[in-house]
Length: 144
Image (cartoon, rainbow, N blue to C red):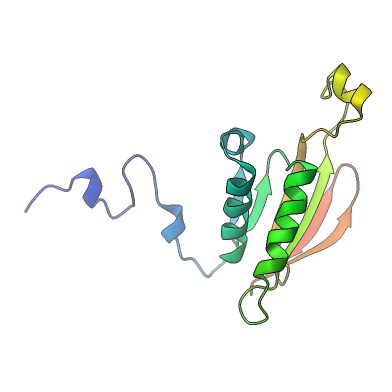
């Protein structure tokens, strides 16, 4: 019997597991995306990463939120992709982290918004925000 090579692995590509093939209908998948992963992406790459996950029925949580321009573009692209039978859109909730020490002096003077915030994004037909304040997002997540 031939020995399996990394390319033949049933667990996915070499160097990591293939979570995209995990088709588990017993729950809701939550993708927690670090700021480090998003740092190397362009605005459109971030939007595609988010929308591809949400279109698959996943809840996407960003460690660091999107810039106001990226968030506007996400909503714009989402609106063009809505289809009654296929994709109902997104639900998005964001809250800023504590502002103490996170903004530079220049950011405060210029009135720039920090992107240091937690963002929760999910399919509109599965994610319902129950409560939101400056320190908590409470959401109800349902299966399709």
